[in-house]
Length: 622
Ligand SMILES: Nc1ncnc2c1ncn2[C@@H]1O[C@H](COP(=O)(O)OP(=O)(O)OP(=O)(O)O)[C@@H](O)[C@H]1O
Image (cartoon, rainbow, N blue to C red; front, side, top):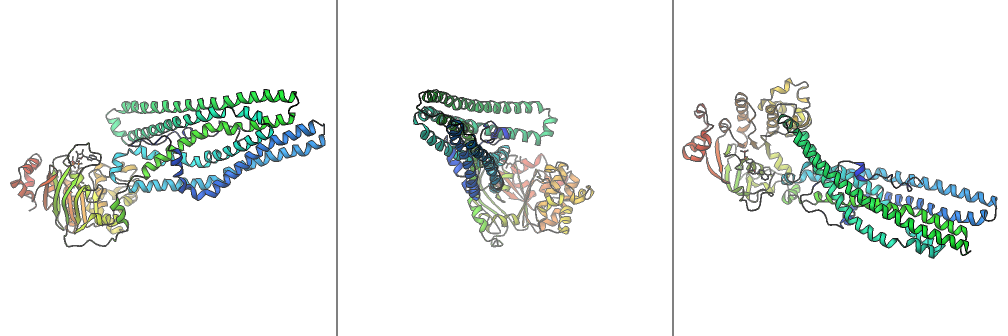
């Protein structure tokens, strides 16, 4: 009896896991989408359908054995007890024992058969979500706070799994038990049954209202949980800045505010549940009291046997759990429904269609009828740019010749990084085309594109892995020699001095290394695959002038066979290039050697005048 007679025992999702999910950028789900959202989970749960059916059957049989007890009691009261026949009592007591043992065994079975397959279902869903997040474009990740995605991949999964293991089974079983018990009550005495069922109508109406309100509150709590996760994540990642600027107090204040909001919502949920509980427990108790009074009067008047009254009351009491559990079962279903909604909000995000389609496209070498990188009429605006703002890139026409290194310069914020991000298709150009050796990048498979183009950004991103693993991300099949050459090209000699050389773990985000060291590893990662096209977004900015000169010298060897576009902020980086392109007002305003542009372009002169050291001018590439 333990499982179904302790309604307070099952954990609510919020109790079980402090941090929940997200903050969907768009509208919250429709109020009554719980069932629809949960139904959409069926393809995942389908694999465990026989287990779910077995669990329902076991729980159903256990509950029915509870309902059989009143019938045995009736026979005991009206038989052996009424006739003082102790010999007839023994088998009936034995039967009660068997029913009790069967119930315990069946409930145990119910738990055991579902636990393992549902853990597998959760793993599959999490795997799909992770894969989807990897496929979604960078513009998606720009919009969605990572804390929100993190909580979707963790606590939401837990809520959904628990729904299948417990509430789903009991929603089915308890409804069946309720119907069976009601029929039994009518069989025993229809008048008492009617009295007992009077509260059903207000209960149903109240429950419907509760469902909508609770779902709204659950969704709000999950969103606030996601916001809270984002704040915690940002304050942990940015702990150095927070400490350096003494901002930990204001961050703590922000945390407290989010935490307080979440607390308020959780209290609201608890209030809604408490009200429902009061109604669900109070009304049936009242009706049962009335039924008891009428029944006792009927027994006194000889209109009913004492055994029937005992059986009726025992049946009504056995139905208390199915009715009372309705509150938290509905609450749990609402939470699981909004968790499922939040899961599908991500899963339904459209993927870049041509990129996805190109997955299966042939990945042969591009046609070389137009060698190099060519931008033709390329326009771009960020999907989340405010309404009415002009396009960031308004018609880029540029040709980087094969084997050439082109520096891209322009005022800060003019779109240099954005332009380079279009080549590996981190963002999709809104118009125009980009070709690599004559092949439109949209016609290349993602794999092929990544093989052809290597990138290194000003902000180097390293992962919690060894130096070797971080560098070889750029060419997993590369051997030791290539690794050593790449490290040498990037002037990453410091690696040899690390405790375990290239096998040294660099810590989360590589924060155990200096900024310049991280940049050099990121550069080594970009060149290790000996890529045909190299996109460098000011990857030497953290290096001192001496090291930068050494890297540049080494890079010349690499760049001799590579077509490269290099965002440059410093004249020293411009020197690396064969030609320079000036980006201004969303267009390429001028192209030429540094010297040519200095003579022909006032804008370029103005841009360089603040930075160009006179001693560099003499050694300009021509
Ligand atoms: N994800 C984004 N969503 C919306 N706008 C963005 C996004 N990233 C950049 N921008 C905006 O696009 C503009 C160009 O940014 P970009 O980083 O390309 O400039 P940049 O020329 O590389 O600048 P810098 O020389 O300072 O590195 C900026 O105004 C920036 O605010």
